[in-house]
Image (cartoon, rainbow, N blue to C red):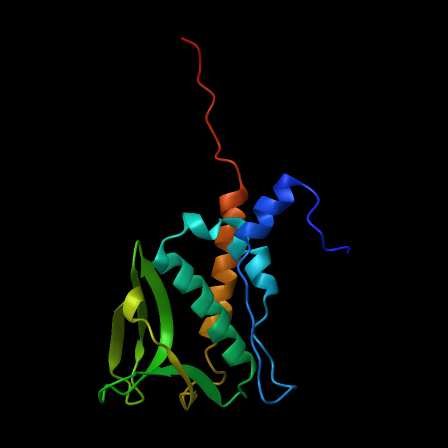
Length: 168
């Protein structure tokens, strides 16, 4: 068995890596890519993340995967579960530790909208909306958010610079 854990360090690392499993009726449907989980998200163990940070990182992967399946005439948006709240074209996303996720965007009519959601109430319905007519290319927020995760992970790896003190 070549996947056997050989050292205690590998056991700790394996424990820190999140699991992802998906099954679809269409065998050709693209699943969420788990590689970024191991490459960027797993640099900080899940146990050290707030519920908001952990939800934020995983939602980014789903948004990016959804966008990868869209044509150039559509952008990602989200619908709201329950009530008649409408659809939000996702233009930004963030989290506020320990337990708040926020989505920034606009409605199909152009009205600016922000959703502030507690992680215990989090439900996200991703939808495809036609891109805005006045823009040549669709906005791909998932790709921007994923790039930001990579950048943040790289910055977290760099040791802090210290200034040398001059002797008096």
